[in-house]
Image (cartoon, rainbow, N blue to C red; front, side, top):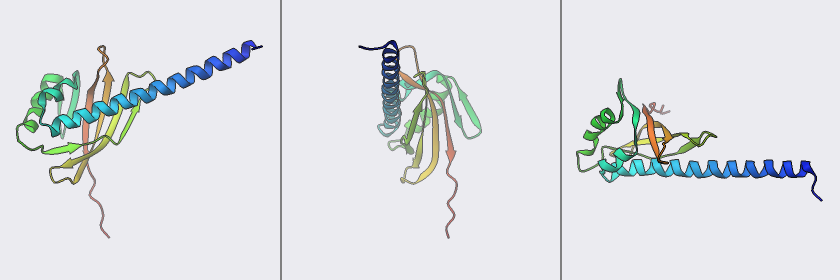
Amino acid sequence: MLKPTDVTIATLLSLCIQSVQASDTAIKQVWQAEAAFAQSMADRDFARFATLVSEYAVFFNGESVSRGKPQVLAQWQGYFNSEAAPFSWQPEQVEVLASGQLAHSSGPVFNAAGQQVATFNSVWQKEADGVWRVVFDKGTPRCPSKER
């Protein structure tokens, strides 16, 4: 016969397992969204890129900042004009808040020759329609390596 404390412990364990599973699912979703974001550049698909940018996005570009989706898209349109992508990136790490509504992704940025030139950091928000979109994006130039 189960005691009330056994039921409480079982319920808590079940909630912990569900939380971990939800977190794993959210991490996979954000990873896939980031990969799709990067693939939109590789495929030269500006329309797909635009679907992954939040209306309220803030993107940093060196000393300038683009605020809101229209400014971000205007800033990034030029990167899609040539036949070949001027750079690429890929997720290396994704973390999601316990709430499942906000996430951080980061990873290397490569120039057209495939050399790592920067690291990106993006913040993703799960919006009302259930789609993860970028709300903050900033790249940091790679520090030059010291050769011995």
